[in-house]
Length: 231
Image (cartoon, rainbow, N blue to C red; front, top):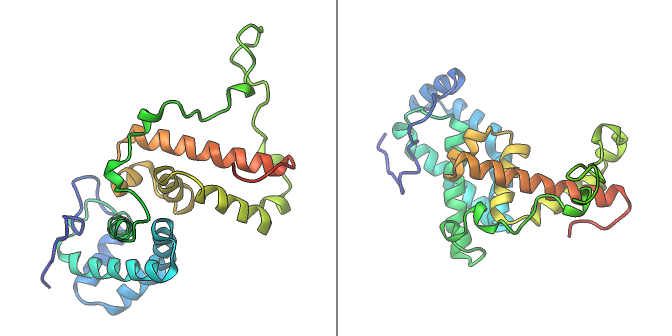
């Protein structure tokens, strides 16, 4: 099988090593095992569609992005050096394809042109009013601590209304925060894998995830306290 490289995204940068299950599946795919490819489709198709929609918004375009991603996977199998997991590699191809479509559709600015997370230091992860004033004995401590989610009734946490609110809160995040929280908390990638997929540093990943989780938490707190949804 010949390999077509597109902006080097069908190869994986030096890093860790793919899990043993990935290596076995990779050998099967390179041998033309159709069942192996079907298993790969079943495993990642829903996640890829979900991620594509994060960038392009339209389901038809998202499906096109996912189709291009699978084509990129097939064309890049021989060039994949198994220095990352198959999942990370596939998600990186999807991310690159989706961003290209988003720019083409004028839906977002180029990812590389966005400021670094530390540049917008005016954005605070937690409202300062939630801490005790400096002139009080407990200055810097919580005045209004976050709600303990383990005390929330399970039926509320699992309700359709709450799920819809969480989806809305994530969708309202800036793109970079939305990418990180989706990959970490919805798709289950590790911090290192997210850095690999998005091409960001470990410190950027931590800042973006913290800010994203804080915003989503505030939206959920407002809802549970009887307030409005995402601001």
